[in-house]
Length: 334
Length: 275
Image 1 (cartoon, rainbow over the protein chains, first blue to last red):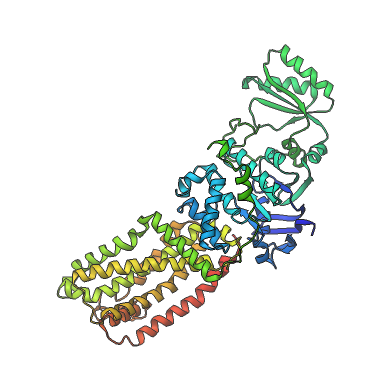
Image 2 (image 1 turned 135 degrees about the vertical axis):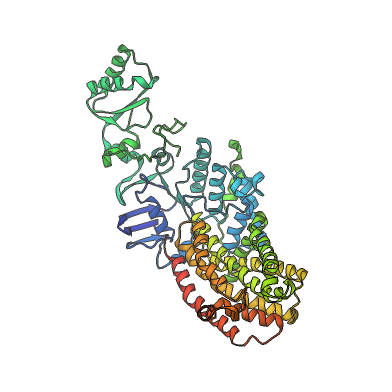
């Protein structure tokens, strides 16, 4: 068996909404694979079908060779799922939650308790073991949730937006866990809206939009498919941005790329030599430049090139400009 | 959290290296584990027991002293009649918590985790029902103790009270399935509660829990006497008095079986249905 996950033309409707519209994926064993797309693209639905929680309306999906509909029980024996919400009992303590999962997996009480303690300590939750999960911070919840999926190391682990809502430090911790899990041979399929996350973690990526696969490959493949280089300029002063944009488009043409940071501008560059002129012109007009970099396009740019619109659909409750958070350059906080 | 709080070195290897799958939990063991979870919730949030302790005490005291003189000759006489009824009413009211619990678990994504585990799939529902038995028992104990203090002296003795309790439990178990359906259909735990009252108020008050059937006008008596809760209260009364409850028991058991036969398959279908 070559692939950990294989889907063929997966389709799923919710009422009139076509959530999945023919998703075909092949993910090799041991890979960290990312499903990338904006809210409502169909990432979560894909994961839920693969984790046996949803039946596809059409198409088929196999996890480690088992059909997710006909052999759901076999699939469940090999997977771990960490959903979008911390799927643990908030009223129970961290330790009790893990014992619960261990028991439900068939462990004797003693083993389940030992395993729970081991995991809590391993995930830096030893001191919070006896506290109710409702008192945990966002990062701690995420970790207990991931830990619950590892009570028995799964062969395939599904992580649905594992870092949404986390501060940069907690996010790095989750990334680190994911890498370690993968290094032990577990196949990881994760969904994310954060292009940087996919770029950092996943060796393979599928970009999903409106339930369709619009691109697939490594992040390098995807970036190469956009073809052009991109210039990123970050200013000291937000108010100078319109003026800077005018100068940039005069020199490089109208290839402005979507940008979340109100002090930054990104633009497609056909000829790198042209880009050097921009810096000189900006300086001449008194625009103070903090960062000036010419590189391959970011995955944001890729998404824009593929769909003609920015990847991150702004929701009304979100601040228009997310505070810049290291290491992600663009709005990583939800 | 400090960065070194993450798994490192040998510890990390250990926590990530458990490959051997235990043999899948048996169905009873999964149900018992989930009932244990229900107990833990009560341990952490004892306030949950407010409804099953304070409410029955309040009801028993209020109705006994407010209506005792008017409806019987004295509170002490009335409570012989009322107490089995209060037991019925209280337990039926608490059944709604099964639906509330199911709804909360769905909203919190907990059912997703359960459903992705290789366990006997109905276990979370049966586990919730098993946990509810504890609530029912607590509520019943409280009512009985308050009753004894107020002068409730059942002629049927401990056995009669126990049989009455078991009959009430049977009916409560059946009614719980209805709230499980609600719990799976509605959006919030609060709406499970609100919806339930629309059904529970008429069901319990349009019965002979508080008044004798003979005091009702004919048309109302005709309706009230068909209410399964009336049969339940009558049967529970007879059992606590040590009398033969006759057809009322059959009525209650029949209604319970019917409710389960209709509601349980619907509830299970909804459970397996995707959300």
